Structure formats: C-alpha cells, structure tokens
Length: 85
Image 1: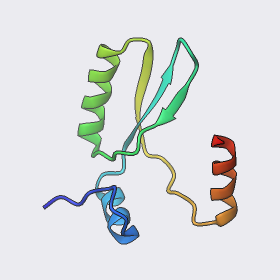
Image 2 (image 1 turned 30 degrees about the horizontal axis):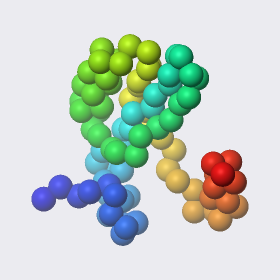
Image 3 (image 1 turned 135 degrees about the vertical axis):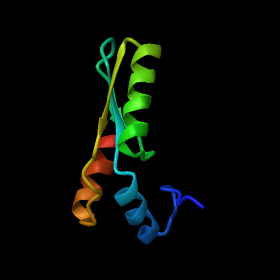
Image 4 (image 1 turned 30 degrees about the vertical axis):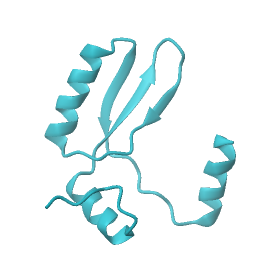
C-alpha cells in the first residue's frame, strides 16, 4: 500500500519525501504568479507530468524540482504565514 504524502504523521511524510522527492514548480508567463505543488513524485513521474503540463498549458512553465524540506523553526513558519496573509 503506497504511503500518502498528505498524512498528518510527520514520520510517514519523511518516508514519502525520501521515496518521492520531486514536486512540480510552475510559473505563469502571463500573470507572473508562481508556486510549487504539494504532491510528491519519483523522477520519472515528475518528468512525465512536466512534459504533459507544459504541452497542455503553454503559458505556464512547469519544472520538476526537489523542494527544500519544511523548516521546524517556528519563526520560519511565522514568516511564511505572514507573507500569505
């Protein structure tokens, strides 16, 4: 049974990130908006999805990335939350 990356158990999340470390980072060439998805993939899955998304959505540039792991420092979490408000 595959481990889901959305699990609340941080131990399971760490295992999933080790097995499937890639996420999809995107940037819209029209609006300038950008982001990184939360779902994780292995390299082959990520590269295939990037190709598919770039063909389907030509105004959005997608790339497979290994994002940095979330910080456990409360100050870092606070900064991120204040930026999104």
